[in-house]
Image (cartoon, rainbow, N blue to C red):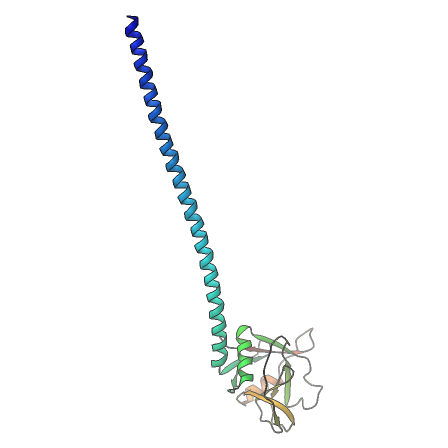
Length: 213
């Protein structure tokens, strides 16, 4: 009887050890599988982050290049700008000449509209027929000045350093100017320039220049 009990006990122990061994192997496989899955997930996440970063960087570089190319091409191809005299004034077309000065101005305006103050509008010589607008010095603008002695109403010139000059009336004013473009000399245009309101609290007038986009 005792022998049978001992045999049964021994058999039970063998079975328990066998089951435990199999369970251990199974757990190990599960752990290995889980670790592999985590490693794969981490790897994918890292890979995804890297790809996204690379994609973002690449997209940014491409965007910058595109913007730069677009800016250069836009500046070269732009034949006109839109100008308003006053913040709420009507818009008029500035037809640009085909030269480096006009292209540079168009290129700069293409990156950001210009809102230029007119600090002096009725206290300088020939103010009845001309206005000038100073451009911030950060904009580099080439010029090829020529001697000008007679100007037609609507003509726009560039004068160093960084100044746009508009003749809104026929004039005989001698100067070294680079031609930029012209406005159609209409009654509405002349009226807009002459009646450009003084900004309340500023004591000056404003001219807005954009590429019309």
